[in-house]
Length: 200
Length: 183
Image 1 (cartoon, rainbow over the protein chains, first blue to last red):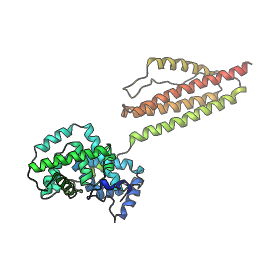
Image 2: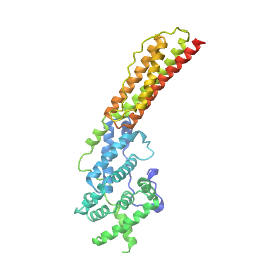
Image 3: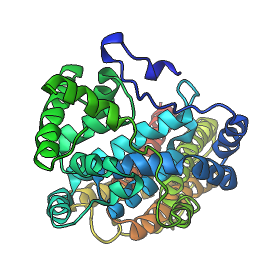
Image 4: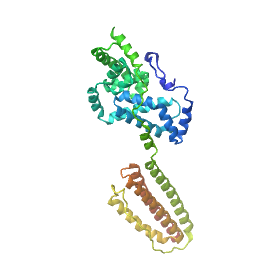
């Protein structure tokens, strides 16, 4: 695991996602080619990582249209910043960072988040839960209804396995704030799921 | 089940949520369209800036060399034929009247200064000023396409300032030459 994903014992989350998957020897070559403005190589990188980036964007925004925009913006920014990528972290982790920044930037600029909450409240199930099965759909719906700050921390920490330090760095908040948001998210989720009769 | 167990189970359950989700449509065409566009807005200012720097160095060096070389040559009178165009910032901004007043004075002085120079020096100065003004025209053209580009506006302003500096420098050189000849 890359240094950026190193976790403290107290922060350990059992669901740590391996962003740098083994067996992708071609990736390094594609990165080098893409850094020399080879768009075909960059498309290969896109194909390799799009599901991870879109998954994160969808979990964080809870909206298909926003997630699609964020995913495209993430890869466009990655293309523009590709020469700054130095392999100090895994390429997937680097993309995740850009994706989180993109989501946060778009949410700051846009008032669509408020509209999104309204839309989600009126929808029988969230688009995010389509990817999950069984009782996980209830959990996915509940996560999607969390307030923005709590949702972002919960998604990065509990779903993607980042430590509080790492999640805080990505979100621009202190690790302590990340812990507080996770506590809030847990409490709200527990209330929501209990009300709906969910038995974890 | 107590709250703590519930919380732990929540985190465990969240770890089973899908982390890789395929978008419902192919997002690549939109990305490809963006990244394959020529980066015009980046290159025009960079090229224009590089051109101005090269021209200024060349103009300054040429004027200095020729003026010093002409120290002992007889002064000849000639009619200047430089054409000065009104400055603009892509139509949305314009230089103020104070600039034109100062520039008008310097241009009048330049005409007198050029008249004191040898034909070779005068031609060199005029050629260099034409090159600088061509650079100004190119930046103005770029500004017409991107009138709000702050970098271009700044570049244009600095190029005008550099043009004034070169003209002023010509005046200083001719005064030095005249003083020596007078002595």
